[in-house]
Length: 119
Image (tube, rainbow, N blue to C red; front, side, top):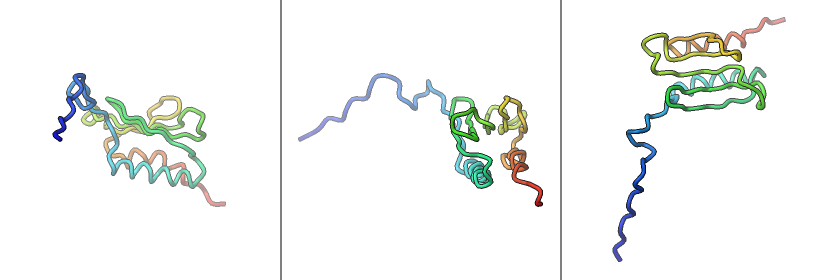
């Protein structure tokens, strides 16, 4: 009983040369972002998140409530690595709050919300 291997589909494959790879956060970057996310959830500031991986950019969106627009977007754009830095924190209105090449330094702008005066 010799079985013939299935013939490949003649169309383009998902990992073909005609489709560029998608930008994604690596494990270390996600660990840094999710660490901040966990602290903000514990403080009651954030409630939900979403991730998008596109051809030119990877986006981690932060929501206060599930059914609204993101209050912050953390973006990774590798094409800007040598210019302005590939990481950016963008506010709800689309304004870039911080940009740089070190993710931890860029996320510091969001960690300021965790610092509150003690009564």
